[in-house]
Amino acid sequence: MQNKKSIFSFIAGAVFLVVVTGSCRPEELKSYTAVNNGDVSKLIGTWNGYSVNQRDVGAENKNFPYKSLDITAPLQFNNVKLTLNGTSSGTFSINYGTAPQFFKFSSGNWSVDDANKVGKVYLVNGVDSIVMTMGPYQYLLQNRLQLKQTKSLLGKPAIIYEFTFSK
Image (tube, rainbow, N blue to C red):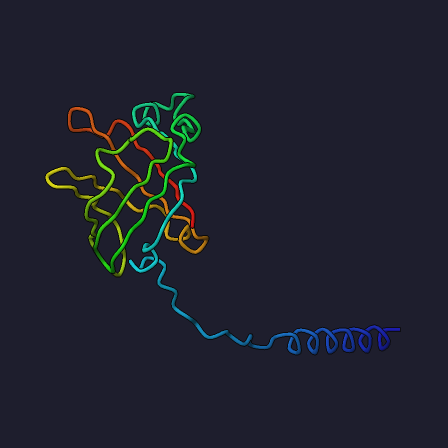
């Protein structure tokens, strides 16, 4: 009886060892391909208005219940077209369609802070300018562009507008 238990334990241990060592194989790693999402060339072209979200920074800081508001419909933002021409800078135009003119101007020159990893987009017309912060680079992979404009009150951010465009 003792001999049968030891034979069974030996066979069970051997099967366990074969299963464990046989299942441990190194995985084949796929080759890494770098994707440059933040390249300025992804911004060039005509972008259609998709959505606008207005965020109240004070309400967010104080954790109030109403922190943001979708203002796409009141601004008729779906009628807006933003066209960026050039390479890493150039001219731009904004066709508001039937939407109200919510920026100071509708045409001018544009540029970026870094052509390889865009962080800020500058829209300039004469002495007027608007500084827009880029949204997530992943949006560009989905043919979307998000630009954020921060409005300040007494030197502190008060309202953030998140303009999302699609191609």
